[in-house]
Length: 373
Image 1 (tube, rainbow, N blue to C red):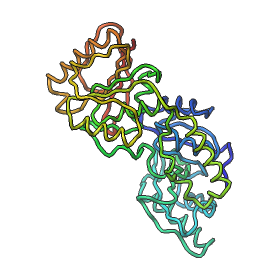
Image 2 (cartoon, rainbow, N blue to C red; image 1 turned 180 degrees about the horizontal axis):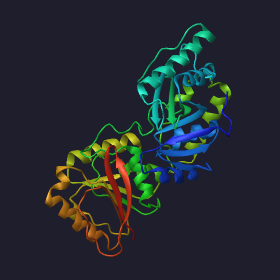
Image 3 (cartoon, one colour; image 1 turned 90 degrees about the vertical axis):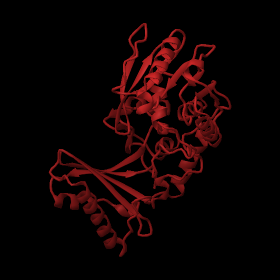
Image 4 (cartoon, helix red, strand yellow; image 1 turned 45 degrees about the vertical axis):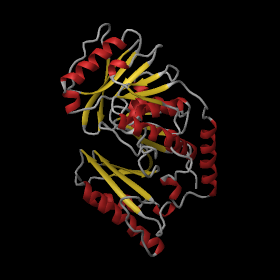
């Protein structure tokens, strides 16, 4: 079974990155995308699904919509789930997990909703197969998402499987860890053109410059060998497999051998060692060095972007003064972007007021502050 090109998809993303994800989808050749809270809606078939899972650097999950129905009561939930042909995707030898959300609806208990949905799915399996699937919450073959909004249910299948922010190369982390997909969103939101040299002067374990170098060369976000959720479903037959493999090969063929210079520095030698190890695993050509902020002065116009460490290190007066002095110096010749907590002190840089984009880093309210040059 292959999905039609008119299949409704919802691509989830970190809060505040929706417009960056929409732009990424356009670059990936997917038209008609519409930003929504928590992600982007778009239509596409198996090629689009594979492309998104394989190449999107910003997405968290790729969800496929399979049903909508009125759901203000338990009996409506039971009937709506029972009407879905689950045998297309889920045979008894495959595992299952259900997640749910509820917004402005009569049925509010998400744990109850997930349990009730699971019960309706396996009841249909018993009628169809005479047996049922087991539940596997950590790594299911079929992930089901139930969303209630104003007593309207939307049922989706998780095509990605494990979260797409995991690239497989980052085993070393710094003191202010940044997920790979959020780093990718920061790069796009900061306005980097993938041509200017890029420098992260507070690189920690190297996530930002590594993501930058791979993005600039068109390297797919996921490894060619990764198996996505949709590839474990009963519907993933030979035809679907051929289309998915063709999309993977096309993505690999677009990769460039060289890109712009990407560099990272930090005052901590241990972090630089971790960054180098991560870059090696990722296959990224990034040059890392040990340096204080005062020593970072690019010789040519560059794109400087950094995620300063939060908490006590950022609150320390000496650290903040050094960062502010560096920004004032860099602003004369370079494009500068800082990813800061919302309550961070104001940097009194000269010239035009910076662009400020509100974001989150997990539960922490943050902002990307950009001084264009």
